[in-house]
Amino acid sequence: MAGARGEFSSRFGFVMAAAGSAVGLGNIWGFPTQAASNGGAAFLLVYLVLAFGLAYPALMAELIIGRHAHANAARALGGLSPNRLLSGLGRGTGIIGLVVASLILSFYAIVAGWMIAFCLAAIAELLGLDAVADWLTGFGLARNLVFMLLFMALTIGIISEGVREGIERWSARLMPSLLFTLVVLAIYVLTLDGALEGLKVYLLPDFSAALTPGLIIAALGAAFFSLSLGVGTMLIYGSYVSDKENLPVLGGLVTLVDIGIAVLAGFLVLPAMYVALHNGVEIFAANGALLSEDTLIFTVLPELFATMGLPGMVVSVVFFFLMSIAALTSSISMLEVPVAYAIEEHGLSRRKGVVLIGGAIAAISTVILLDFGQLFGLVITVTTRYAQPLLGIVLCLYAGWVLNRNSLLMELQRGHPGAEHGLFWKIWPWYVRVVCPAVILAIFAQSVLG
Ligand code: PFF
Image 1: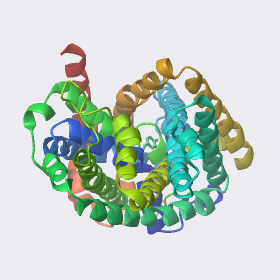
Image 2: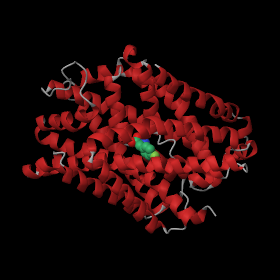
Image 3: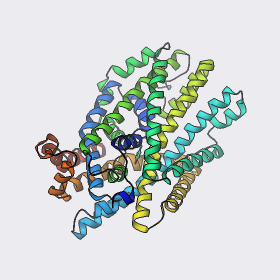
Image 4: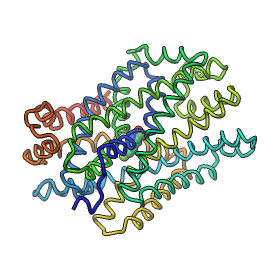
């Protein structure tokens, strides 16, 4: 049965696809810029604790439920209990998750479109086409629409090819090139004057900035966003994993790759900011704080590249290409969530489902672009700060309390005979039952009350 609905062909394929979903704009843009303005290594430390302590167990909850059911999120969660109320709530959670995944994609596609536009702008500059480059880097409505649509078309194209030929094949191609480009760029930037200053800001902790409640909730949101949690992405990827695989190990690998790439991106973006400062590009606002995250990426870095002459233009092409790839391997995972639902619950063909849903999401992106000032920030806050962690709690509760203990143990024993004696089986069930929901709620309560 699993084969008929698609399955990853290998462990490597799954890890590349799931890490591809996890590694995205959140790692290369979000994490380094947040670390820069919030205490450097202190933010990194808080982030690491939350990522391993809360996000990894929540990731495992999704992977286990997904593989257990080999079905889309609504059916998987709805099928965990014969109790009508629990089953209905589970289904509802799956459906809310797919709506949130679609909304995340609707703003993500806009930002990813900017990345493609900036990559092409650098190529235009290399060719001496300055007017074209100006149009590409100006944030006009037409430019925004064209590149959002182009990015959605790429996402739709890959997802319509299915699990192996689309998701797995493209992730396995794009992820290694992403890692290679990131390492080469970071090494290059580290050799430039001023880079050391950025390295210091990144690696010397300032705890006064990192340990405030507002920041901890931001780091929690960032960790959940970075691991693509709560909305059913990892659940659906888990549903395409073969019964032979050892899930805790695979989930651990995905977490390590995700965090590793965020940390690595810090070695590129922070030094680059200070190289820019060294070259006379302003990175601080009048009040002494760092400029906003989007100004840093879309103004400071291009200005830096412009001060570097020809090598700068090449670096600019490569940097924005890297961002576009990272975004694409994430966006395909978001689109797969509602598409799998449409195929399995409403009998649509993959192609039809992908085009209809991808089209609807592009329409939402268009509405956001038309009222950008009001809608863009709102959609980001509601989906990533609130919906993702809150849905994550429900998924942990379902994995911990509703999935029956024998099925859970059976899932863990697949690919790992003797799992019942292992540390994971001793610790994790209590972790998702009590610790994860309680800590996530406490962090929320703290931010609302304080
Ligand atoms: N993890 C992606 C990133 O860090 O950019 C974003 C993301 C992907 C969020 C998939 C949610 C999701 F379902």
